[in-house]
Image 1 (cartoon, rainbow, N blue to C red):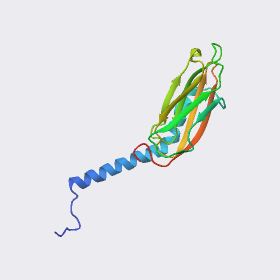
Image 2: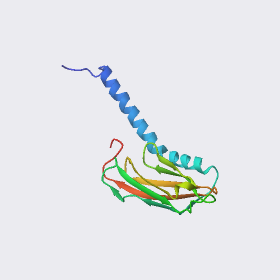
Image 3: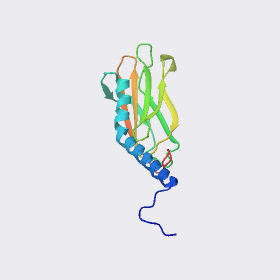
Image 4: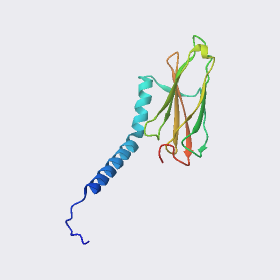
Length: 154
């Protein structure tokens, strides 16, 4: 069957074009907004306070062979007394479509501020921990994880 130069596109072709445009547009916005989304999350935790490095020990693999199940352990140096304890620790992944990985809340009766879990990482990226202390101070730590197989559909 011979087609002329001004053949109309079928409904299927329009749907494929529209879907591809939406996917590319969404991926572009995620890539561009990734750093801004993470920074806005951290700014919300800070609420005008300054942030310092230290007191958080992150334990992550340097290379994750599968981004679907990346082990994460952290511990925050604190006496965990009524006068000085870790209130919460927030974990972010700066390369995921949504940077929030999880938040962990503690009280002095916890004994120590530590946790262990698994997370998904979409690609090679930084994992950032932000710890809020009972005295209002905030600490952070960051570690890069190289992902060889994507965990969020890639």
